[in-house]
Image 1 (cartoon, rainbow, N blue to C red):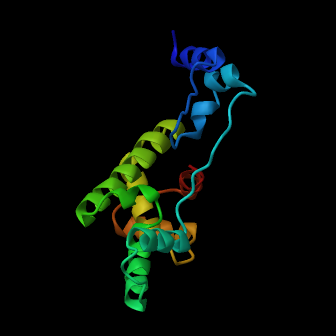
Image 2 (cartoon, rainbow, N blue to C red):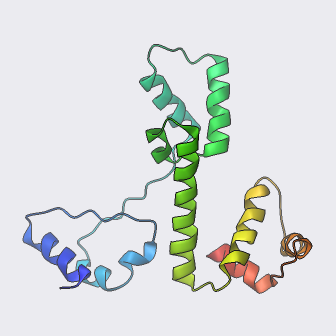
Length: 166
């Protein structure tokens, strides 16, 4: 019995509620969607906002007031680490960095590369490195190709658009 049929039979029996999670939206675009047509709900989980992160910190640390120094430190952490709630499970900054790096690798290298059949993964990583280092700057295909050329890499404008869409 295939995965799709198993999920459908568990769902149809009424004996179990089935929750499927993942970052790959293609999961429900194939056979599984056909089996579950009209019987599934998509729940989009978004990163925490800074206000939500501060509220969580205040709830966990009830004995500490949110002084301006604490808020500043929280904001710097939010800028550096983002708002993905999973990182709150870890106390060590090294573990948090490993968690975020694992997420990056699994989403970019597994989901995006496999879904879009990107062949030059190394070039995609250079492209992503450029984007991450220039998040607050406007960019054009020319600035990206210029950066990659200075690093000894070549990327066409069409490929840049394809990578952005992916």
